[in-house]
Length: 287
Ligand code: GUN
Image (cartoon, protein in one colour):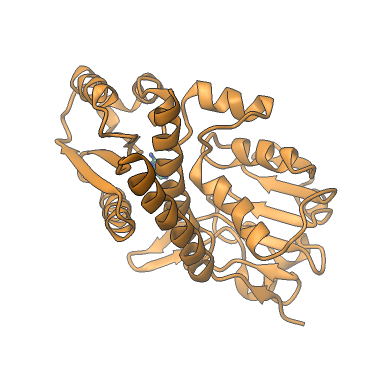
């Protein structure tokens, strides 16, 4: 038996269509056009691709998009000053600092991200937004894990009462996804590099999410027959070859549903970002 393949494109299109309607509503009812500013520091080629994609998607949906490209040698204080300026600009509803930052200021990443007004933090990385997610009153939630939940919902895959296993404990994916799944009444296990019996735990999963950054970490024997497998990994194994964390060709014969890489859940990240920009604009209307 072969798994149902969950292609991201159709789901992303639905989410973007709903964001587009919300943009229209903000314009017609409140005279507000949502605006996103993305700051990119340096010349990281992958980051440049991601930022271009965000800009293009904003334009498609009627969101005002500005990209602030700063040189590689930008210092922390200049970056903080730019964030202060954007925090004070009422036309900017969302601020996103593209990661990773260059080596010279990487150690200050937390201080830099924490400077963003939590109501404009469309990445959902600010401690205020992380705290709200953990206590169960989320406002702005990180886009990639939110995309995982949206994909399960749109695919009609039940979460309530299911065993979910997440491989990876990053602040961007693993940890926020733990809380999103918990809020939906899944029983959640988070595995990581020190986990002793990963295959055995993974095999308990009705929903298995791989977010480890290790190509082919998830093999067919780690998947319960019929399980839903969501592959969040994006690993570049050759200049033009991207693979996920799951051995897709073997897993597709065991899983019930599975996301490919590329073309899977990653496509939902930008769509969810657009939703967060709309949500941020609403939060600022209320304040
Ligand atoms: N770089 C890779 N993923 C992300 C993300 O979700 N947000 C930001 N700001 N940078 C990233």
